Length: 321
Image (cartoon, rainbow, N blue to C red):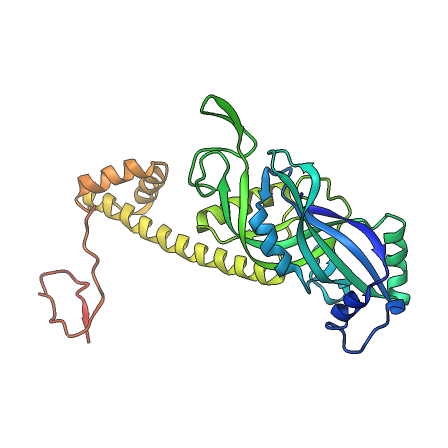
């Protein structure tokens, strides 16, 4: 599960109090603090057919120490409500997960100060209303359970069964190599598919964009401000490249028309250009070949130290500096 639950509450021990006071600006007493346990996530296959490996959970235990608890993955200062001061990966004795290995979970201890501001939250936690949590982190690798290839490098689809060595095998992605943990959040409905789960992967751009597109289509992806800015920057770069490609292709189409119909212009040119717009790229490329422009040399308009071209070349001779 990428979701988790608040499991129990207790007074901090002397050792825990020492860990907590490592994060505070003044020494707090046990009576001033509310301390509780949180199961952040585990090594079970989740509803999106993904699971954290045991090795990943072990590394995540280190990454989540000191991380802030917030609400609904909303990265605002006023949403900070608690902090993890201890975290470990542990196996639950006698329990197995759905793939038959020992069931393991990420178990954390968190604290918040007792105050007028937190009294309502403490009451809701004690009453079992604020109970479910989910995690926000970045993973470096996704691997297909069927073939062991990186996600997107094979044709296997998550959630489908495949026959391997005569036996059916479920396809899911193993998530490993975590490299950052952002936060953990109290959420309202973690039982929903991928509810409140925040993940990012350092895979190839095509894989990242593909996964993000699917999440956006489902309407359940939450990004940090930094991630949103990075994504917007990436989309802007893609748009600029697409605009350049569109302009280049437009010029190529016009070259085709001029090759076959040198005197074409006006409405006839517009009509023929519209006809070319309907062609597949393979059909356009065939026309480029017939027009003799498929390997058209790129003419540089600025050639340092070059000699002027012959005046008979064309009226758009290269500029020379």
